[in-house]
Length: 294
Image (cartoon, rainbow, N blue to C red; front, side, top):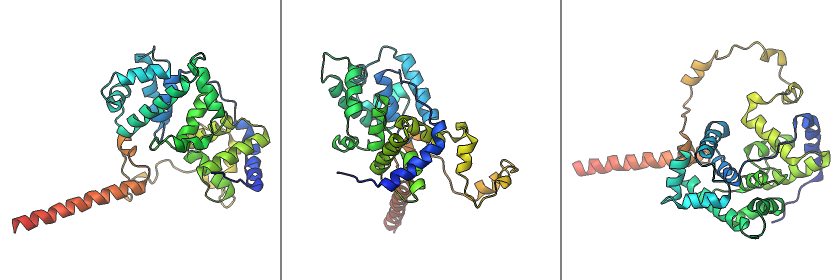
């Protein structure tokens, strides 16, 4: 399916990229093993990277220093009765969805890695990453492994591209003042980055860090550019941290979900739908008990 992108949209994004170009530093080569890269890709989807993914990768690497290739990972996973048992015991992660996804992604990459046996696995995977079409993600039939995950996998194995996750889509949408699809965000950012001479991965990395690690993102000029003109910057410098924390907490119904629970629901609508179903079951059970008592 072909997606057309407007030259005016490319120009608008390119103009923004020129403003933040100094912050889009070249990304160092990823020297981690293919096995670690695959685990990184799957675990990081809709999960806190710093709090959840990094410590698990570090622990796995310490326990299995010899598990380097994707085929090594496939063999290790096969030693467990189920992918879920593997992800529980080896990664301390409770998600049947992620376990099945990891198994399917590993199987897919093993096929690519063994495509040309005379070539080292990493070279086969890099060649795939450089040549793959983003929309191939829809032909894999891996549930919940959409374009953002597919593109991140390509980046990990050497492609200079972007992953249209929530941060990238929001960045492009804010510039154009309209909603964009994942493929549209991807194509627009690639075209705009090329137009201003920036590495797409470097742009992707900066946007992701600004969204996922805002406290660590530096650069007063770029951050000031995000402040709308109707706000007085001087009013933002003398605030008292936590002044209204108790009132805010008392007036909200926010509930923090554990990672494995949050992983099962893509958005708040899905959570509410599931809870309404639980309430209905409870209500039906209550009425059934009343009927039996009569």
